[in-house]
Each structure stands twice: as structure tokens, then as C-alpha cells.
Amino acid sequence: MKLGNMSVPGDCEQISPILSAVGNKWTVLVILILSEGPKRYNQMRREIESISQRMLTVTLRGLERDGLVWRRVRAERNPPQVEYGLTDLGRTLIAPLFALCHWSALNVDLIGANQRRYDAATGAAEAEEAALPPR
Amino acid sequence: MKLGNMSVPGDCEQISPILSAVGNKWTVLVILILSEGPKRYNQMRREIESISQRMLTVTLRGLERDGLVWRRVRAERNPPQVEYGLTDLGRTLIAPLFALCHWSALNVDLIGANQRRYDAATGAAEAEEAALPPR
DNA sequence: CTGAATCCGCAGGGATACTG
DNA sequence: CAGTATCCCTGCGGATTCAG
Image (cartoon, rainbow over all chains, first blue to last red; front, side, top):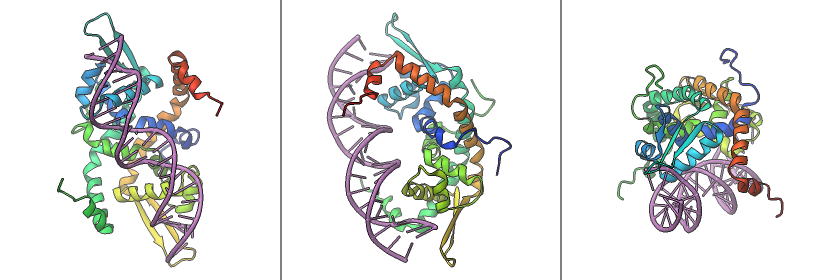
């Protein structure tokens, strides 16, 4: 099962930290919404909605540190504005990330069904545990 | 910055759980080594090496639950053998995962340099903090 | 508006020991 | 060999508060 000559240089293990950083929930979401163009802080907050402002800040700092996102401050204006956007490097991440998102969207239902089937087949205990409706 | 008509159906937010599950360190590694073909338990353990046997088991269970990996027991043989392999669904994940790995491998050095530059420019404090030898 | 700082609960995940 | 069970600790991440 080789995919052409796409074998990754070096061991896949050494790039795990990057995958962890890049593959986590918030990072993916932030990069994807920034793929539409530069945004301001609270604009992003409103668009993601489920994110806390702490996680948004932390995520943006991390991405800025990695050189995937730039940050521009408009202090002279009132109210002060801060814009974020993808760098060239960050933009190269869009395609692979989109591919993953696409795959997820395609298979989310199938996977859900698989999980339910698995749970029903193996652990009735866990099923009950997840089915507590009161409260 | 639209990538053709690749816009993902439904909000990207709803597929976050899948991305989290699929994008995490161990899941990626396991799928990638299984992309070479079916493997036995300890065989995988030896190949990944940095993984604890607990995390290997947990990861495999999760992948099996999602229907990405199958599991086959050879109890009649001694010593007992258990084989794992990718399902058809699991195999469809290889390409996007490879793309991500490829990107990571390409940019790991650049990102590392960016991080060092960022740390040097902003937080001398953090640099000292990371270099505390006493204790 | 755009954060930084603090508190804190909880789950992820490592190490170790035990079982069939 | 192929796990399961237990302990335990770290860090993610939410809520809240304060500041420029």
C-alpha cells in the first residue's frame, strides 16, 4: 500500500509534534476560517462561537509562533483593531486540511453508525452510561 | 480563497470531534504503519516504539470502534496471535493523512526556525524559563 | 475591542503490575 | 503474546476577572 513515491522523508514519528499542533480542533478551525481572508479578533470569536476567548488567543499565539499566521495591530484607531491572517506558509496548509475536513464530512455519519454498532455489540454497560437523560 | 468548490458540506464545526479523533498523534501513527499492511500487536509496538502499550490498545480500540481498523484473533495457535489491519474505510484515510504528514515533514524545520525566532523576539522570559538548570 | 492573568476541574496518557 | 487494571500526574481548556 504505497501511494506512489509519497513516502515521507524521515520517520513519521519525528513529525508527530507538528501533527498534534496542527491536527487539534481549534487550530484546524482557526486556519479554516482564516482561509476566507483576514479577520479581526471578535469577528473570529463570533464565527467560531463554540471557542472560548482564551483558546482563541492561545491558538492564535501558537499559530503566530509557528509562522502560519500574522498579526497586525491598529492601535491608532478607536476602537483598537487587531487583524489576523494566514501567511504564505499557513496558506499551504489549507489544501491538506481541507482534504481532511472533506473526508470527515463525508464519513461522519458512517463513523457514527459504526460506533453505535460497536457499542451495542460489545458494551451494553457503556450504552447505559451514555443514555442517562435526567439532568 | 476558495479551493474550487471544495467547500465542506455542513459547518466545519460539527466535524471537529472526528478531526480530533483522527488528527491526534497516536491515531495518525497507527494508521500510517497499518497502511503498509496488517500487523500483529507487538509488531506494531516495536515499530512505533515511543508508544505505551496502553495507548496502543486504546488507540486500536477507538479505531476499531470507528470502523477504520479490523481485528482478527488466532486463539487456536500458540502463542495466540492478534492481527490488525485497515478496513476499506480506514484505507480511504491514508491519502489525506499522507498529505498532512508530507506537509509536516516538508515544513518541520521551517516551523522550528520560526518558533525560535518568535521566542527570541518576544519572550526572553520564556527562554530563561526553559533554561532553568537549578533544581 | 483585544486581550492577559488566574483559578480549577477533568480527561489524556505514561509507568507499572497482573492475567489468560 | 496480548492485553486489562490501577495509580498518578500533567496539561487542556472552560469560566471569570482585570487591564490597555
